[in-house]
Length: 165
Image 1 (cartoon, rainbow, N blue to C red):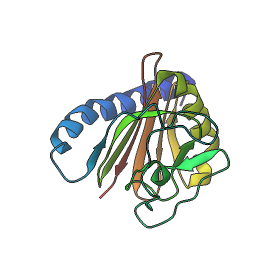
Image 2: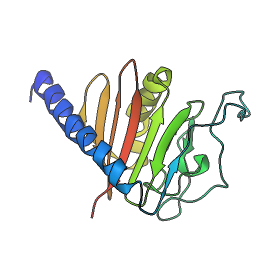
Image 3: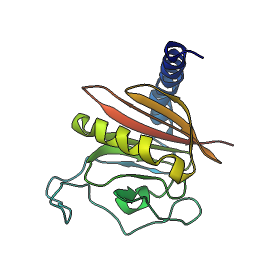
Image 4: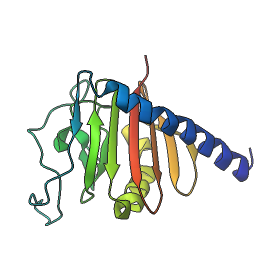
C-alpha cells in the first residue's frame, strides 16, 4: 500500500473511531464507571508538572502496573480499566476522560499532543501493541484484547482504548 493509501486508511479508521466515541460516551455516561473531571491545577508532581489528582494505584484489568522508562501507567493516574501495562508519558496533563469497563478515554491539553504521540510511537511495541495505521498526527493499534487510537490537532488531543469481546 502506498503512503497516501496508508494515511487515507488511518484517517478513515480514526474518523470511524471518533464518530463512535461521542455517542458511546453519552450512552455510557449513565453506566457503571466514572467520568474523570478536569485536573485540579493545585496538584503538582515531584517534577513540578501539574498533574491530575490521583487515587491510590489501582491495577488495570489483570493486575500489571508497569511502564517503559519515561512513562506512567494509567492506573497510577486513577484509571481502573484499560490494557495491562498501558502507559502515557510522564509530565503530560490529562484534562479529562472516561474510565469505563470496556472504554477508556483520555483527553490531553493540545500542547501535550506531540509528546504523547512520540511516546506512543516509541513504546507501543514494548507494551505489547501492534500498530495497524499511522500518520503524522494519528496512530491506531491493537493488542491481545484492546483496540487503541490516538489523534491530535492544534486544538485537541485524545486517546481511546476499547476492549474487544
